[in-house]
Image (tube, rainbow, N blue to C red; front, side):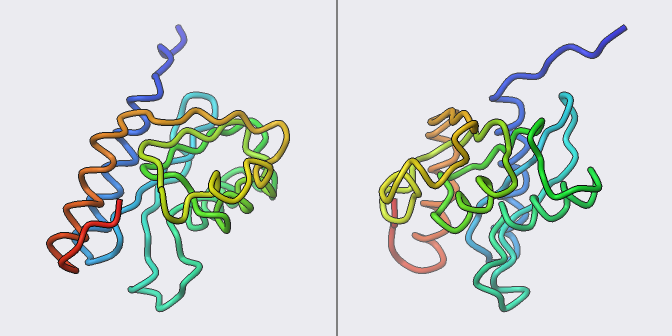
Length: 153
């Protein structure tokens, strides 16, 4: 008997759990999960402060974990779920890893990849935008208001 397919909202909620972990570590609360065959194979959140590394975004951490899980550098049969629209660096990594689907919650109106070019993604990557956008936006707004005294989205 096969497992019922989970929907985009389910996996974005899982990514939100990762964003909460980042929030508790005083990291910008962005979370992601990578899914293969309806199963989460990687979970990650921002670790830029903890690792003192500007490239330690949630998406980069998750891609590394997923490629280690799969045993190869391409993730063509995988989907990535991110709470916030990826920045150009992360969209580039998603493109290079050839993920089949990108699903994100809230738009990033300051640094989201779509502000620069939709072509950063691999031509075969399908993007699904705005899933649970309000919930995804709320955690990052709360972080910047509480931690840094200003709202960024």
